[in-house]
Length: 355
Image (cartoon, rainbow, N blue to C red; front, side):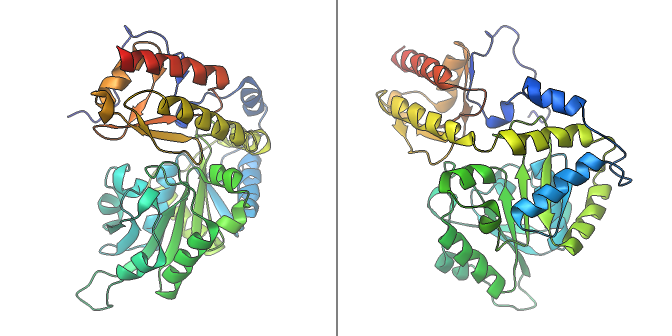
């Protein structure tokens, strides 16, 4: 069993089109220049002006009182859980949520909390499903303290929560006495796709964060937002987990650049995802889910290939793809994949399936 990252095989050809994830984006020359020119100080000591600028802008963007800069989105999720919950508490989330599938059992390992996964198409659930999961408040039941939603829903195909449904679910959670938290890793993809302001989407959330390392193109960093008291408590967990930083303004400058230049252009990624999906759907044996944002999921079972086998074939031709199960694959468009890259990838997929 391998836990550490495995270095890329040097015998493989160079990557021509990277559809593995939007985390694969490289900072542009202009973003690097902004980083080099950043005014910095000791972030842990409260002396980094670029960090303060980013946190102030993010709190305003998401309609919250305060914000804290963190190295990663997973740390945002885990610090939010540590702040909202206590050992033995139960979190309610979709059964495919990132905190269940992709954070190394963090809620149990760090907080001592369990996560109750709810069913629902495309990573979403409704009020009746949520209310059906509420436990009678008895001393022999785990205290249910936190409701978590993911916008967009990654394993749900990059699905966007409709605002009315999202608000209804969050209101039902509050009515039952739950704190509410949004995993906003790709929140701005949802904002661009739905045409709804970020603060409106996050209005019913006690805590919410945005990742800058995906479609927004920064090399690292995420910002967690909430009430002033929540962020004050989150800072202690940041300290305990080693998330306090020094001259982090270099990183915050990349995030500020992303806010100024890389949000509206997410629409290009969504358009490229639709083109990619249409092309994949024309390949015999592939069953393609209609994308809402920049994630294109498809089933390979009709080709006689597993998702991993297809990924291996296209990698030999310089195209990277991620897999999410025996026959479920995911292609992700981002700022380093243009329309030419999409067409190149489609040519490789056609040849790989016909091989």
